[in-house]
Length: 200
Image 1: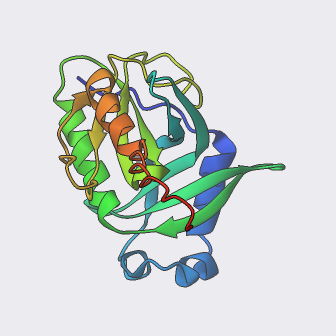
Image 2: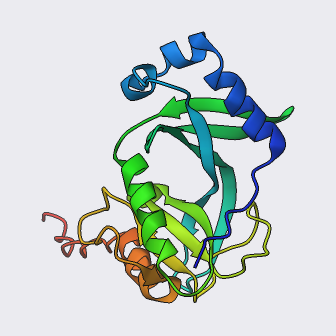
């Protein structure tokens, strides 16, 4: 079933195209694969990046939109990604980057294409756990910039995943959030030893 990729804001796409057309922006990027790429580089698969700052014990998940991420494709593969952010003047290019999340995002998107039910792909970041997931939202008509994970939505942890979390194992939000809630909850402090009486 094809994924319903939400449309990115036009100014965000324009800012990425402008950066790709700027030799300075490309040469200053810490992305050797982008600098060495042969042929035209094109931004594809815009995904809204949502951040989940806090997971409450009740499982309430408030997310905020942090930006839009574009995979930068050159030839047959994605060589980097471009991040945009919202500024007081509108959407603006933030930076290029590369690393394991690029290939992992592509792999997770390919996995999602094999699911029978249609989904809207997004990215969901858990900064407290150093974890990024592909978030498959069940409402394909929703505004990609808003909303929160529904219990029946699917999260696919991207590699590298935190210890004990299997990368590329799709799980429903209702299954994964309790695990993440446990991980994000600080362990209780051990009880203090009893106070000794005052010296005589």
